[in-house]
Image 1: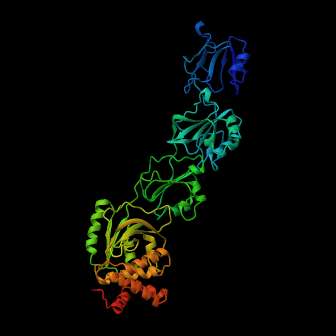
Image 2: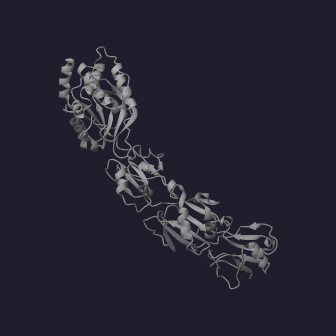
Image 3: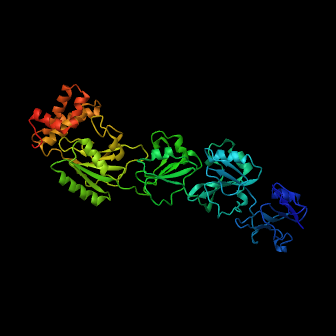
Length: 533
């Protein structure tokens, strides 16, 4: 029988087998004209070690393939010169002999492992901590997040890939959670590495994907995602939070190699469905934007429930015309439910009645004086990565040319409206709010003297009470620009400024502008103006 050599762990096939650094070293040690090169990972139970090549192949190196590679690590090598390599041999199978180690992300590892460790921070540090505890040439490192029920652990790299870091994709995520590692070279090379991605030779194994286990799904009815995330105790690296009972599937797999790659993945335009990494809670205070890593590239995977639309009117002359226009616009461009709230006395009561008619957590409030922009996108959604707030769109004022939030459509948060006690001068601005610079329509408030005057009066009371540059600019526009023949808009602005000065900005006196009856009496005294005019 020919000499037999191996490197590393002894196969214990024959008494006369000897260790060598590599094939070249074995050639120098061999005492037979041919010698075997073997390994402990191959199943030799049916292998014929008495094989001898025919005379015309005596100078060839004969290599036996495994079920995975052309070179399975079994060779018959001439002691002298080698003319070429002969791979024309039957497969000699590899066996499940490599140590399997596990990284637990919190949910536990079902597949049996020699040793496991908790995932902490990133894969680089976790792998180093784990591999420092084992005495093995090479090993598998698997993850609690993957399903290995159909994975073949007999896989091995080609002979020229031995010292590479071999990475197996998790679903469609190239930076997967399963590794085949040469222990010594990994520990040596990563001593000063800051990122695992900087490893000198990474082999992203092609054509083999290991499925991840399903991500837990939290279905909730809270207005935003913030509270739901705060309240959840994570025992997995990722959790799906959704306000819609969608069938969630085919989500792109998140990269778990390090924190900066573990992004909040937004799956719908209003963030009604999101994938949240556990690390988010380390940053979270007021909004999910406290976490610095957010991916919106998948925001069109799912659709959020369209917001209800509530048309609010209280005897305005052009209410029916604007309502019909709204119906046509919403019916053509969206699938939103449309409600009408009419004749509710008092602004606060009217807003609350509108909120009570809505079945969605936010609703579009369209006021009777607003002729809605025909092309408005009714699929618009609030941002549920933030805490609940109102969203104020823009409207164009045809009388003074201003375009801002006054008289515009507002996406009201239902719960905020129902709890608003209107402590300030502006119902909407009394609570958390955000301006959305999208034109919602044209505010035609100048169709009669009374409506024109009271609209200008109330708005300019608020503008006069603000000292910022923008408010003062808008106030000047109200006071100087009026395209109507009788100038009732300008007159209302002037009366507001005069009234503000007469009460020295006293809040209780300014708050009277909320009351239609007080406004009616003041208009009568000031301008001999009555609501019927």
